[in-house]
Image 1 (cartoon, one colour):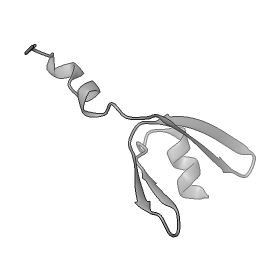
Image 2 (cartoon, one colour; image 1 turned 180 degrees about the vertical axis):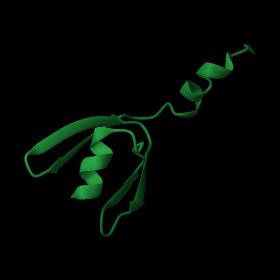
Image 3 (cartoon, one colour; image 1 turned 90 degrees about the vertical axis):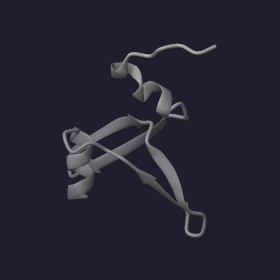
Length: 65
């Protein structure tokens, strides 16, 4: 069945995968963030790519660490 979706909600259809929890810390500051944009990059060594907006506090901690 074909349905129209408002443009403001289209991004919900693009990413319907798992959410992951990513922890970050720098010195005495720590944070945890839920992320939907992630992808396996390598099996050996195990590497996962993630996307974190620059405006998030976790991004600041990751860049400093």
